Image (cartoon, rainbow, N blue to C red; front, side):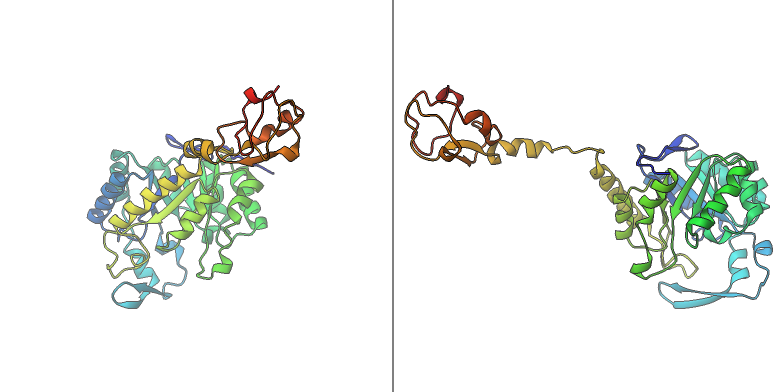
Length: 353
């Protein structure tokens, strides 16, 4: 495909794609801590900030982890590096079905979209019971054919992070989803690297052009510049992690924005989004006003005697642009001076015949 404009994908009441505001997802999948009180506080907070959706994770550590002895090291704000058993870490983020129902109800109450990354296949029936409007996978589920097919069978849109995808593996995954009955695809540019040369932000317009799907960006850290770069490249979705307190010594918090930071980030995102403007070339009102002073008019270079035929050699272009425009020089050349025109005079058509 070769698309300059992508068609929107509908998520609940919102269209996601070109011609729509950037869709903002607040990620609390790690920073909720598996604590309902904290989760509800985060939902209230992001609703006040004005996001479109709040994102969770259904991890299912009992199923996800074949080796439950694996450890994971992450950085905390005050305590440096911390190593934790991954199964224990993920188990703290697990909710019961009843708790998920409470969370989904609370999200709906605040007019937000509930989005949840499913890491195991048995999450799909529960997410369907919660009546999600879109499914999501991370890049590490790209080989989980049955999970992707299960999402496709729901007939709902899918969000997927690129990460380890190549064009061939992405094509394969999308085929699994579409052949199973899936409808609507949103691709999120994603990477797990601090190396600038590996970030490959040109994949954003490439993906839009190749597939004709909405494309977003899901950053891994607190950096703002890359988010703003993504806006300039045409992203339709931005995801950003938020925490109540960056100093909480748990995974994910050190890379998250605190409420005030998230608020400032989102305001700037909306400003830059407006700055993108239209797919056209449009002067500003200030440019139009200033053009009267800074455009050039035709002036007489030397004295021009009455009845002389005007030629290029007799003319100069000077500011301001309130006389005969320099763009009309070919209309002036060949005209006759009906009166004496002194050198340095701004010409008018009253001087010419």
